[in-house]
Image (cartoon, rainbow, N blue to C red; front, side, top):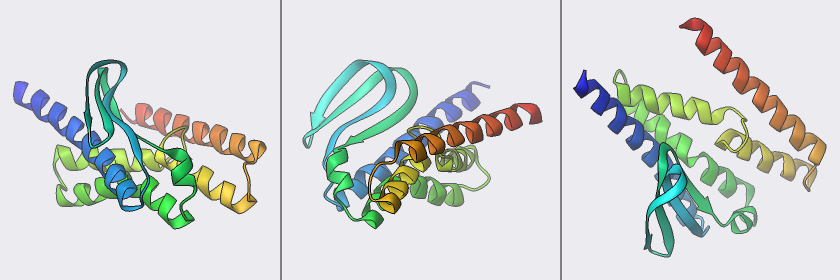
Length: 166
């Protein structure tokens, strides 16, 4: 039982870290500056500056992030923006395939699929915003709210379906 908990915990953190490293390296390839990277949410427990990036470990050990210079990202061509935003999902899909049949593979697949949902601040939502703004040539608050609320409804439906299947 202890081995399973350790495996699940390490696999979860590795999945999050590798997802964010996908964004990090894609942003670097597209000359998008990285401001901050971290593991967890909430108050900062530990921080260090590496290669002009503030790296933090936060109190709540759920989630990870790479904070980019969003203005620099928005100035990149559409395909580069989508490449940077989708790189984490791409890493998770590759790892899911390589580790198929294992807990690590399942966690990577779950994170990739979850990030495709256009739920607020997830990769699918950010990509949707980029595409909509390009289609309309400017931000459109009505369309962006529809995407945000629609993504929330999709995420809620997926959650309800998952809970009802247990």
